[in-house]
Length: 409
Ligand code: 5CA
Ligand code: ZN
Image (tube, rainbow, N blue to C red; front, side, top):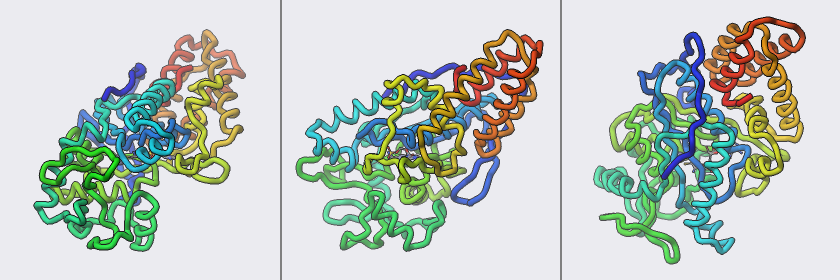
């Protein structure tokens, strides 16, 4: 499917810095030094409701990754999926009496608009689960033929025992894995499974539900984890730089994905770094479509909020922190945007070369956006309190904020 239009990324003087990023799998910070083309896979939305601030915060983190890499003059090969068929989408369509394909198309279109408004750089490949099915089926067949998968009443399950590295992405104990599996789309209590954690690779057709030709698997639809593995391996290959998503994807989604890929290729891990963004809450609870405690990006935009202010609100939190969306967070971002715009709209100002380096330094250090904002704040405060005469400074600050933070002043 098509993605969304890219906003231009201005080139900055000097040299960008390599990204150091926290990797969930090794529980430490690693320096990624990709070749001329950096490769990243970011898990996309399940389009049964509009983009909320939690989604936007997670995509903001990975947009910063791209911007840091682009600043080092690398190309970025960015792939994102759309889980356009899955239980929650079908359940919502059924509940509301909508056609599931129309629901998915409508919410995906709205997501594109939100991403465009927030100046998130688009993926080069934006792939739906449905369009990936012809690539998924042979992978499931291979896993089954290699003894890494088994059949249960027509459904096909992956055997976590097939992967000697199972557990090394999320580093959780058995009890935590079991609880999260039940919470996040798994079925640990289904009788007949070899291991309660085994995830479904292929679900045999159910009455009243959509299904596709699965070759020797029979008609059905793909499991969730194999969807992302198939798309990632097809477009990026093994050993790409980052697999990203919110922290709720570490287990089971990214753990199982790494296991599927290990069983398919004999290699581990699929991604050099597993990067997870914290959860955004509203009224004390994680913002989630299933709970319905949501602030939608599109609703804020409709009410007249400047998308640049939304973006600044996201940037005012470190991507790994869990944080709470409040009216105050937005009001602070709006005030900051106004101060920054006033400072760069003056014809001249204080030299800003050091600021470019400070923002680079902050972002290369595990995407420390709050430190980058603080650096810009310092320049803005000094600029507003003085009468510097560097004519190039306001433009350079605008371009820096645009190129590295995705905020148009
Ligand atoms: N389609 C799958 C991934 S393959 C999925 O998780 N879709 S989603 O729509 O539920 O979430 C999309 C992304 O937003 C995921 O990375 C998820 O971790 C992230 N996300 C969901 N809720 C929040 C939240 N409250 N705060 C931060 N990120 C969130
Ligand atoms: Zn995914």
